[in-house]
Image: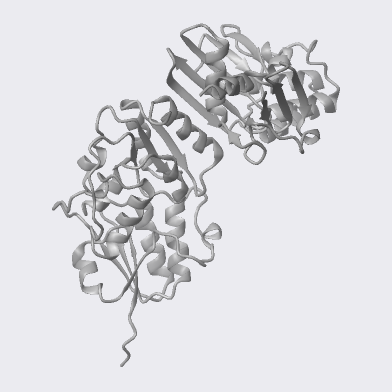
Length: 245
Length: 215
């Protein structure tokens, strides 16, 4: 008998029924960057695989995990379902498939707070593992800009936005603990200059581009590290929409 | 007095605001130059104040043009970008360093390689599918190996670049052109006949820096 804590990797936002019993273990979000992980996915996954799915694969292969829990419900994509199949077939640890169809909102105080955008993302992602809303939050009544999308692979994109930038899209669903809430994911307030972001090769790029046209926003997609043209487009968009002087 | 610079991939454009002197140097000969305000691919390390190229392009247009609405396409050595403004507000913009990559650079390279005078070369009605400079060059060499003249093959390449750029900006009936390609007569004549191309020269981004200095 050992008292070693088990290392549980998870993908997406598994339902509380799956995560709750494992909260005394070490929970590792495989969607996020883990320092020191070797990149092996290039030789295994198709070139049109998004950076987040690649990262999940690399983390799952590299980290010494005891178990992986995958949310492969409506809030996740076919690529995640396919990856779960691949991991289950090639790893010797259990890969538990779950579906998070929760519709009970936990609220979005971080998304709507006056914090810097990068800090918001850090808190939202940390909140899956730890307690939500552990820091005092102050609401931003008049956000100068908004950011729609999934969490970006390169967090430097968030530095381009003013404090209090409102978080929309799937990341908002993530804080709300309703990752499959399409209505919330599509919600965009009128009149706020909004950047619609998708990972390159992600199916969400279709709706991101559509919403950008519909709401007169800016659509960008990034594969991994943010290139200079994307940075320049966001800077110019925020500048000429009056967000920055 | 201030030195303003557009530190491009291949060419550096300089403006001395006091004397009004303008200079164009090969970027490899301008590696040690610095400026007070700069834009361009190599600007960040060489000026205390950096303005990104899209903002410089828009500000250059606002400074140089009197129309309430304009679209400027900038074809650089390594990328293409455009900005569409209406009454000082942004309508649309884009910048690609992938699909349009190395187009200007490759055209200059091919001109030197084959000894083609772009001032007298005739445009072609056919085009090479130029998704990027490198892939387009493959097609061009294939044409030459099939017996097409070098001048015709390069003309098709130039038309391919022009068509690619024209589709990129949404095929408007009229637009302004910025950058070194303004001096390339073959390129200017390679756009569709229905498109009115108005060259603005190589200092549009630098003019944008003048505008930015006042802010």
